[in-house]
Amino acid sequence: MGPEHPESPARIAAIKRHFENIQLNEKMIQVHSEMAYEESVLRVHHPRYVEQLELISPAKGLIQADPDTLMGPHTYDAAYLAAGSGIKAVDDIVEGKYSRAFCAVRPPGHHAEPATTMGFCFFNNIAVAAQHFRSTYNAKKIAIIDFDVHQGNGTVEIFRNVPDVLFCSSFQHPFYPNTHTDIDRPNIINSPLNAYSTGTELMDIWNKHWQPAIEKHQPEFIFISAGFDAHRDDPLGEMNWVSHDYYWLTKRICELADRYCQGRVISMLEGGYNLKSLVVCAEKHVKALMGEEV
Ligand SMILES: [Zn+2]
Image (cartoon, rainbow, N blue to C red; front, side, top):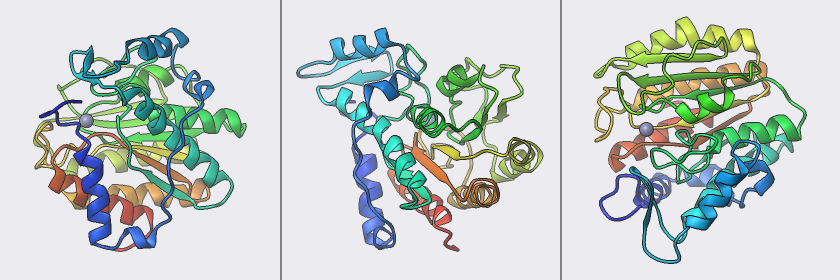
């Protein structure tokens, strides 16, 4: 993304180093990503769009795919790897190799619409993983939880007319991207939050809206767009969540996954730009996925 850009390679390096420092990596199976098949990306994105991305991909230097989103020589491949990570996790989980996965990927995905890059995103990673599961394994009902501080406009656009996909999204409002916040569909649960709101409001959303909706939907798989930029120290968001809020929410999600879908959860990294808070939030989130108490 270029120097000084918040969506930097240091984010993944910091998570990896932190997990090694606290020996969390020793308790989990580490799996390398594989490139997504074009076919799986095309379940979500228009063929012309994917073609165009390849065409504009620079041999050196950086180009601007949109005002927020830069593209270097390796971005196109990285986008395919990020999307492929969720696909690999779906396949492994269905084969019973493990039941939950955290995909530490970039570029992130939830702002990417079928034919638009947006907000540092190229391919909508979580949507590609969800559609891979639904079409490859003849599944219907899934749920996607998005707790990034920014609304997952791309995911809404992709699934707004797919009632079998329940999408629950919390986000600061009004705030970027401010485009898909008043979609009126029973499968789209938008939960806008005021700036400076805390974990208390999050618990409220969960108890009143998300948990009842998931219980009614009875998903066969739960996917998470895990952005950690609602943390109080994040430089982009203006909310006041703390790392334990991510632990609490992830625990609740896992309880429902245990009840309805054999514990199956895939979480994919979205935002989170303060490296110190990012690594601690990711730690708490992953510990909850692993069933550890903190
Ligand atoms: Zn974000």
